[in-house]
Length: 348
Image (tube, rainbow, N blue to C red; front, side, top):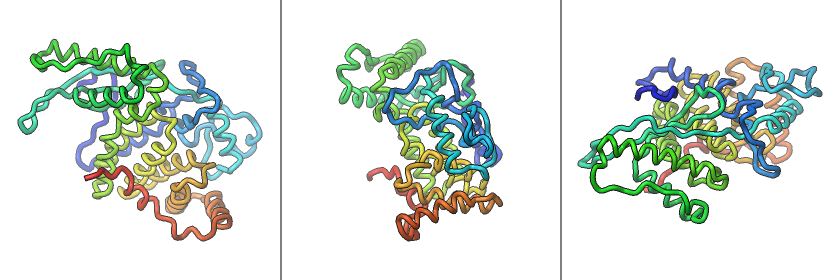
């Protein structure tokens, strides 16, 4: 793919661990996070809505030092993990919920490619998702063919028929599909179609819309994880995470699952530092949701990874002890990997 709209295309060859580490840093870096702190080009979430948009920031952004725990904390401040206390975590999330706002997105289709496969010929459209209002160095993309867009439209019509009655979906043509002029027209038509759907709030936050951008890829990534293809799984899931952070920061479970899966891939590839950071990020999302099925396994794996890195994990160990005091022995709980491998299993 050429870089015609300035997007960063995620690419990886073989078992190149250096590129994997680069991608991990890219996904977690503060200035490339999809929920930028204090972005003035964003709208304020409605009162009462499920708001976990703060997880787009790096887990350590905005956490105060011990002598600042009672002060309002700037969003860009950070400090070591060893100083994370329950009080600081709560202040962090309160600060983030006030400052971090949903982003606005653009959809570009800069390129296409024609595929000849088992007697079938079709055009694949590269859809790049871009955060507007600032330079987006962490652009993510997916490839979709006409039938994928058509399936999206059918799903949208099923639940949002009135909302899209004035939106035109590109009609199927029986001849000239592969002419450059026709392909160029369709690129523009699909770009405008996605933009019009995104402009409708109920559709923008719907499963039908957001899953169009990542569901096939996340299913493939989990399949690779189950079969031990951790490098391939990591490549796909990092791109999925970038898309999810832009499209569905309101979906808590979705983000926790992807972050957990990426953390496991990093761990099994020997990238312990990155595994800790991704699991920590997932744990921060669930910091006050101790009843979540991933909560105890995430804290447990964080403690194990932190000990391996020589970090002070007293605060998390105390949390595990409190859970056992409240809920009894947790040793029968499934491990994080046992939970993750059961996700996104396709029928048949």
